[in-house]
Structure formats: structure tokens, C-alpha cells
Image (tube, rainbow, N blue to C red; front, side, top):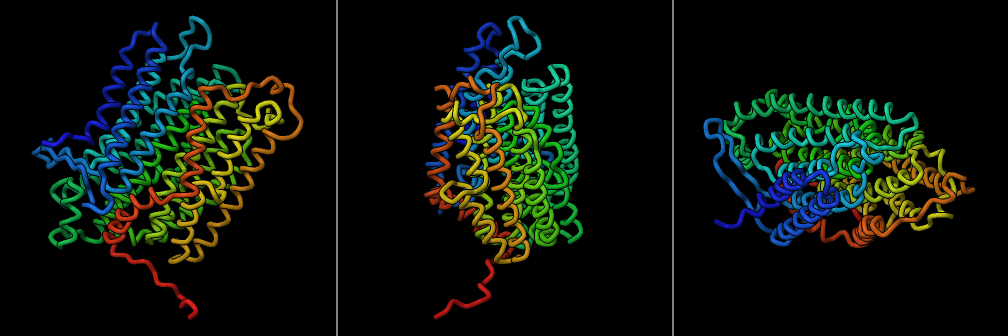
Length: 523
């Protein structure tokens, strides 16, 4: 038996979470160091998966399959395609930065304070989320995927509600209330989506007799499994609803601004750059592969919802007074682009959507973590409380600017390539949708540049006059993310080479080919 590399990649952070939680309360730094070491070891395993994966090989590679609950056809099945490998690598890359950025986020407010959970709990929960996200990307058994898709809500609930942002204008008591509200709202929204999905998962078993994604897809391809049209559509809606909540897609998005506002900056990155990607990834892996005809049937409505997310999220970002809520609404707009690319049903759109998931994770992490460093210095999330920061903390301001420019998809930075591919792929099949979506780019430039202008330029406000610049630990967090944004902006080929074969197979699942140009090239 070959070494179970995929199991090890998910099991290591899970074991690390238990080991970190077991660190004695008096040894706070030991918990931080242990969690950071586990995250780096997980990254090493993820790199091994990346190296061993052959983009031109079988669709699912490094596969593992073991009987689990035989009576119900549930198996422990893992396998990765190019899309899963790219997102697994993104997760493994970001978690060490999340841990390093949150190095002091679980420290007591004052000596002897009991208002914060132990440090080891904070980092153990982060590692637990990493383990569950990774196995969600690897699972090829529908029931196995569902278990971890839902299980990751529990550690996220405690990270939002128990380790929230300390910067609150109405005091600690009001902050605690708001954190609890945001955590409960996050949990309830996602639980409702998960319960609806559970009904659809059971429906899949009733129709197919098993939960194996590969077996069901193969049976559908060779004609041995047929789903009635209405049955397929209802099952598709059950899956899609849960994924749209997590994505988040308008109008199921309202939990995200509250969660990101009340969470610490590293946890906010964990939400939008890591956990939410499971929703869009699952649309590609499960919705399109299990329910190809229903996916095409629902495409017009989903594209309209994605378009509303793009414009609505960007418009609300323009009007925000809170830095973290602005980033949250910007993310809603960006997820609209991702979902639009997936359901444009073109190879450019789906390649762009997958690349967008990776690039959005990096750019949002860079912007949100620098914003977190800024907020921790001033003790306020309100944009109006800043001004002239670039004169007293030029490195902080410069990295904030690069993160913001990546958010608006400036050419030369990573998100530009993915957004361009999404728009080209959408325009090829749905030109009206593609044209209207470009309005989101204009709004992105508006909210990003206005945010920078109001916080970083102008007269230096007295409250920020003594603000220190980025420290060594903070530079270690931000600098690699900036480098990644530039490298992938100039040379995205390593990622596209991995994801393109998987995208072609997904296009084949839904029996779609790219539309031919309507105007022949001039001879």
C-alpha cells in the first residue's frame, strides 16, 4: 500500500490541533510555536501533493478508497484534480500567515483577565479548520464531503464568537454582544444551507445507490444511471443552496459582513480566503459533475444572481464607514465574479474562476492582514479615525496600497488575469452579462482608492502621529503575499497549467464547448 499522502495532509493539522490544545495554559508561546510548526509541516505535505500531481494524468490522482459504512454505501474516498490541488496549496500557504499574524490575538486584555479563551484554543481551532477544509477539497465521496463541509462550522463559530476583534467603539460589553450575534448568524445561515443539502445528499443515495462521486459520474456518462428531470433539478438546488450560502452569493450573503467585522483580521482571512472557497469549489466539483443538465437549466438565474452580487457588493463597499466591512462587501462582489465564471460554461470562464479563487485568497489576505495591523495600532475600525498614515508609517501604507490595487484588479497583479478571463469567458456566451459586470471593476477602483485616500493621505491626525511602522513579524507576514501577487500577476502559467485540464473535464461533464467567434478574423 502506498503512503496515504492525502490523508496525511488533512490528518496532520487535525493532530496538531489536539496537540496545541493540550499545551498548558501557562505556556502561551509554546502553543503559538507548535501551531506554526504544524502549519509549516502541512505546507510541506501540500507541496509534495503539488509536485506529485500530473496535470496530464488521470482526473483524480493520489486516490484512496476504503470501506466505511458498508450498509449505506459510504466510503472513505479521497482524490484530487487540478482545481483541488490549487486550492489545497492556497490553504496550506495561507494558514502559516494567519497564525503568525494572529500571534497576540488571543492574549488577555490585561494581566489576569479571564475574558479571553486560552491562547492554545485559538490556534488549535485554526488548525482544526485547516484540516476540515483540506479534506473537503480531497473528498470524492459525497457523504464524506458533507460531514466536513458542516463540521468546519463549529470551530469557525468559536473563532468568531470567542476571539473577536477588540477594536469596538462602544466598549467590551457591546463588542461581546456583537461577536455573539455575528457568530450565531454565521452558524444559523450555514446550518440551514447544510440541512437542505443533507436532504439532497440522501436523495442522491436513493437515486444512485451510493455516494461515490466518480461512480455516479461514470454511471451517468455510460447511461446506466438516469435521473428524472425534476429529480435532478431538485437535488441540484439542494446542493447549490448550501454552496451559495457559504460562497456567499446574494441574497444569502448577509452573514459575511457581520462575521468579518467582528472577527480578528486573521480569522476574517480564514473565513473569506479559505472557508468560503469550499462553496465555489463544490459548485464545480459536485453541482456541475453530478447534475449537468440541471446546472445548465439554472444557469440564467445564477448568472443574474452573480451579477447582482458583483454590483451590489461593490456599491455597498463604496458606502462603508468600517474598514473590515468594506473588505467584506468587496469580497461579496469578487465571489460574484467567481460564480459568474463557473456558470458561464466556457473554458476561459471556469479557468478564470478557479484562478480567481486562488488570487482572491492571496489579495484579500494581504489587504485584510495589513488592515488588521493598522486597526490594532489605532484601536478603531472606522475609516474616519485615520488620516496621513503614509507619512508616519510608509511601509504599512505601501503594502496597504498594493493589497488595495490587487483588490481592484490592477494589471500586473494576480487578480487582473483571473478577472479578465472571467469577463472574456462570460462575454463569449452572455455578452450582456459580461458588459454589465465590468461596472463592478469601476466601483472597485472607487472604493479602493477612496479608502486609501481617506486613511493614508492628507494631514496627519493626532491619534496616528506616533503610529509605528510594520514590525519584523508583520513584514514576514505581508512581504511573501505581496511577492505572490506580483509573480502570479506577471506569470500565472504554473497555476493555469494545473487547473486547465480539470476545467476541460468539467466542461465535458456538462456537454459544453466554447462558442465560436461570431465574426471571422480578417484574412
